[in-house]
Amino acid sequence: MPDFHLFSNGPRPVAPFSHAVEDDGWVILTGQMPTDAQAPDAPLPQGVEAQTRRVMDNLALILGELGLDLSHVVQCRCFLTEFERDYVAFNETYQNYFPEDRRPARTTVGVTALAVQALVEIDCIARRP
Image (tube, rainbow, N blue to C red):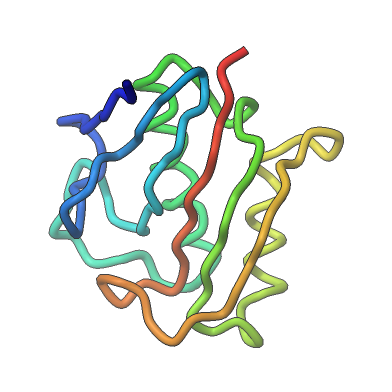
């Protein structure tokens, strides 16, 4: 039976979902927005670089609650509202969160809109050792 996790110190969900669901060592994290876990009503950071950092920090926070970190991530799905404009800058920021020899599999797509008018959203799958 899967374990459903919603953490009180995690980013406030923008819809009805769990922060993560875990089953048989697999951990699926819900797509994270660039909201501030400590100040959920604060404005979003400006620009795709700052929003990407916030999203990655939110993913790391949730993984940390589960005793994991970004090194356990095996796959990410990334969503950009301004794909053509932001793809290069997004990659420059994203790549700093993973060592060059341990980058997870990834899909990145352009979308017409995201919740809270974000520029970026990322979900991921991690695996317990």
